[in-house]
Length: 214
Image (cartoon, rainbow, N blue to C red):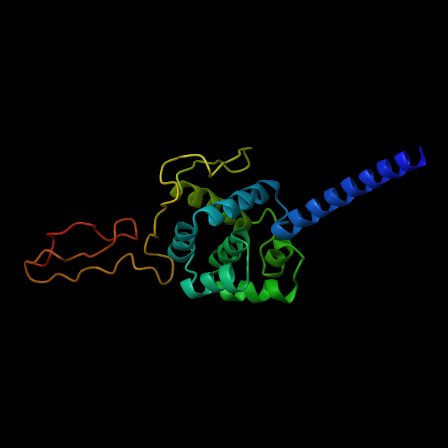
């Protein structure tokens, strides 16, 4: 009987340790959002999932619409192991403030583990402020470019694993995001028809041929 009780205790201890390990693993794999807004936190969790599933369109979004340099994005995601949700919010804060994304990265690094709400407030974006609402609108716009419609402060859950319009393709910017190449055209070559060499959705260029300079 004593052996039986020891077996039961050992089993219970094993289950408890396994549960603790699973929780720890989840915390390690996840990231510390804590923006101070439940709706924003939920969107960042979904953006994080999108970035892991669709790396290239995610980078295109951060570069084309938020002006983040591609080398910085690759460095954060690959060498430093940042979660896509963290990369997104750093670039979104930078875009709202009109500063380089690297500035926000440095600020985050100075106080690791405090959450994005603390970072945003130190940089002048307070919950409920106009800049904070601009961050929310930016999330709505990003979702729209990824083929999903969300409404600010309305409960919603987006599953990026399900098929949808533009899923995994995205767009590459509107020509207003820093180093994007939306308006790289107007390189007409006589009548050869290669003018306005914009790249479709990669800005405001025209994706046609045959509009060269006459």
